[in-house]
Image 1 (cartoon, rainbow, N blue to C red):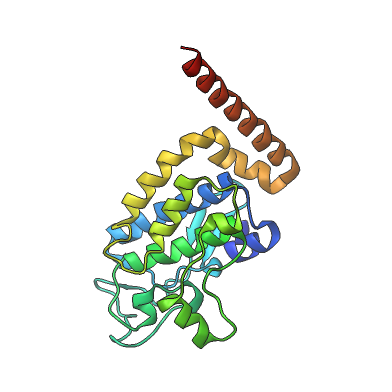
Image 2: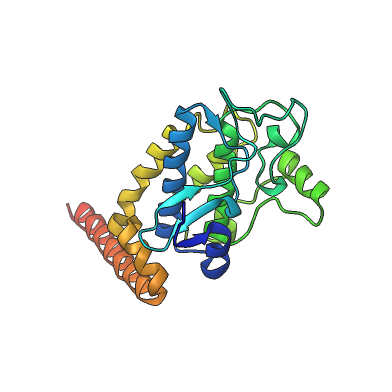
Length: 231
């Protein structure tokens, strides 16, 4: 299938770090795609910027390159103990060569989300070996340390995707998607494909829309606090 757009790798290089609503829109689209693949009992195992395609027309996201997938009735399944994937985007269990489930894709999505918001990969090192060790044992800096404008509720979602113990990670793409969609209300229509297209064609105009939107939100919050204190 031909997609008129970019890989997420190229998109992030051209635009990143991107405004919060754009990062949220892209991550929601990735989670929707993963929800479908996971419900079809397919684990991608190599979610990374080069394997995510974004349409410049409507912001639709498609996941590409299912070359090392794992799932029922599939033959491209590496043996247990064999490390496959891209080190900087692997889950800890994947980097250790352990058996993985769908949560490995959620971890990789967390890395992508982190990268979109901050412009940095939290685990990449000077060598492949150091990158793998960072994935397994390294501490991931809080998003807010690099990008203080990211709201706390979004930071919590990013870091829950990046929990090294998968029993404490989001249990499904559906769970993560539901939590992220709750946050979308904060940004109204700014997370829609219409505004994604505006961002791609006219980033400065999109920035003006964000500033105006957030100024209105701050005014509404200040008004609520004033009314509450007055009463």
